[in-house]
Image 1 (cartoon, rainbow, N blue to C red):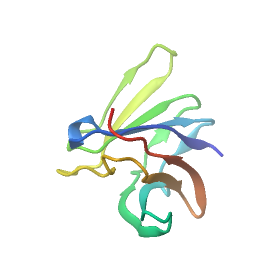
Image 2 (cartoon, rainbow, N blue to C red):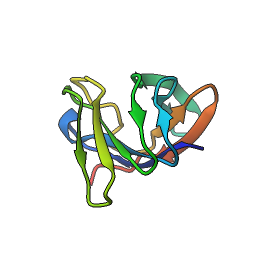
Image 3 (tube, rainbow, N blue to C red):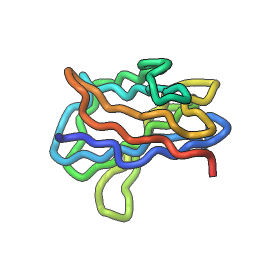
Image 4 (cartoon, rainbow, N blue to C red):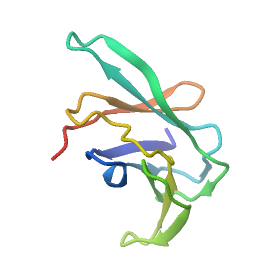
Length: 123
């Protein structure tokens, strides 16, 4: 797996929500997407892929991070403490993606499911 979700920060406003991903080799993000899945009280999927973010054609290096912000914004990148690059991408939503009570699942997909992380409740 060359790209992996490592954390989801849940919030009660789009400006506070983001998904953190890390690369494990040089890659192009084209063909990847982050989606959410919501479950009912019995654990059954209630909204499969309710929201989807399709990554742009972006070449990134091994060890780089991607912060996928729920809110609107413009792509930027910066050097980080690890000595790699952090890329800031924006979903462009005026609404929250993740359920404030937690329980959603953030999934990274390409041609098959790559990685899922359960979203925690708002802190």
